[in-house]
Length: 238
Ligand SMILES: C[C@](O)(CO)[C@H](O)COP(=O)(O)O
Image (cartoon, rainbow, N blue to C red; front, top):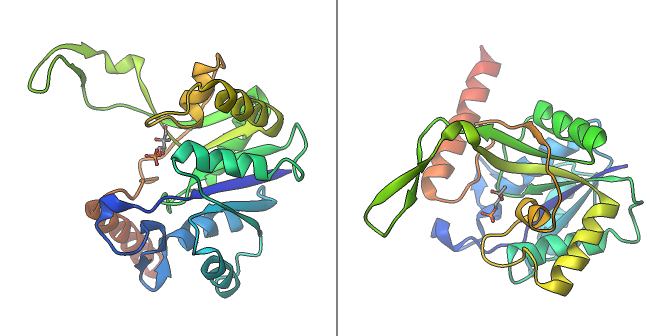
């Protein structure tokens, strides 16, 4: 079984809106529903679990009914940090998933995930035990020496930037969150499943990412999302 674990536990202050950014309407549809539709339509996804900020669960069930997201099976509460939210989602699957089932973790605010990206991350996980979508860097990365200057760069050929979706076998994922939270490894600051896994000594395997798979963090990202949707619609009308 392949289960999507969608993370929508945040309140999204950086967007400067009154409502959490995953619930902002774009052309009469909430951002989160665009994300869920990507998983709903994919033939390899069997079920979806959503980690959702408190107070919005009934709203999500109503939207799921309205937009035909019938793969959505479970909603669990968000945590105080990104890692707590993902942990809640993983623990919520303990009586639903077997060791070898694949869990595909994805940010609820990345609404442009392509079917080919999902297929490749699942295939990579089948082959190696995990898969993280990633992209090369096409800009130079410099290390700050202080707040205003640098004397060091990292050759970009040695770097990959990692996105979601990320796929893990459930047994390993569940083991990792229990160990990480028991021992305080890889759960602070901007940690995510990928960085935690590496801190726990695991090797991660790259799957194909996409430049279109943007994370909606700022208002500019929202404008870019709208532009992508318009471009798709214009292509479809041609
Ligand atoms: C993939 C990711 O960048 C972590 O490596 C993830 O998208 C981060 O999400 P966050 O909400 O900005 O922590």
